[in-house]
Image (cartoon, rainbow, N blue to C red; front, side):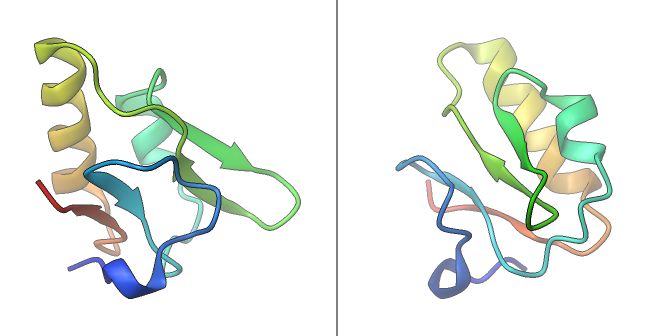
Length: 76
């Protein structure tokens, strides 16, 4: 499970976040590309936009469940 105390600093505020365990595998960006971004310099994903629709919410949940290192958290 993701650690809210280890959130990547690039995450926007809100219930979803990516923590420092991210291995930059690209699963979240492929699953929910409108919500997850990529820090190329440091090699990690982050939440660039919180979901604004039911479809985006479902895609973020799918990304969370698909993350191989459980680096995506949900504080909602």
